[in-house]
Image (cartoon, rainbow, N blue to C red; front, side, top):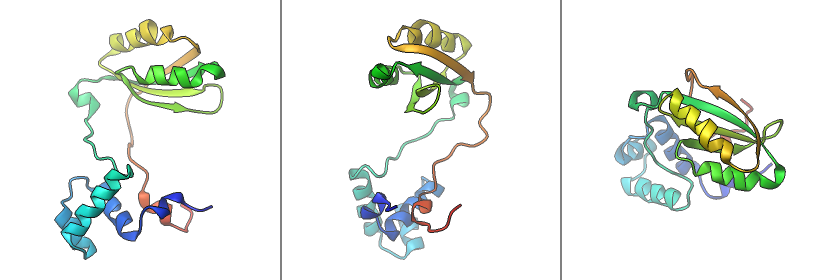
Amino acid sequence: MTNPFKQFVDEVDIAILAHLQEDGRKSQSDIAADLGVTVSTIGNRLKRLRDDDLLVIYGFLDPHRVGFNAPALVRISVKPVDLERVGAEIADLPEVLSVTVTTGEFQLLVEVQCRDNDHLTDLLVERLQRVEGIRETHTSILLREILIKQSDVKMLFSDEQT
């Protein structure tokens, strides 16, 4: 199967992205030196990658250190006719980090971040249950993250199976 990403980027772009995945604060001059290209080449390529919505740069807070101590995954069963509307309505809640359409018993997987168990309870009981079209929810409180990362962009260009 052809990788559509390859039509937008080349090996230099992938190398730049790999450097940023390794260290998102790495300077353009350090990346340029590592890749043997000019700083302006790096700057121009980063601008194009951002303009083409292939690269989004953001800061990531440690949720526990800033006071979000009740993370959870909520699996939601939804009437098929209501899937898109319910997903969009849930996505508007400020506690929601992600909304994903899934297969199986539950059609939506929602990651939320709340201050504490009272806040999580309010979200689940008072607000989420009021969304029309939700049939059932199952919530798992996340106790501890072992790993969180992005996919390695170099895998998109690897012929080897990992």
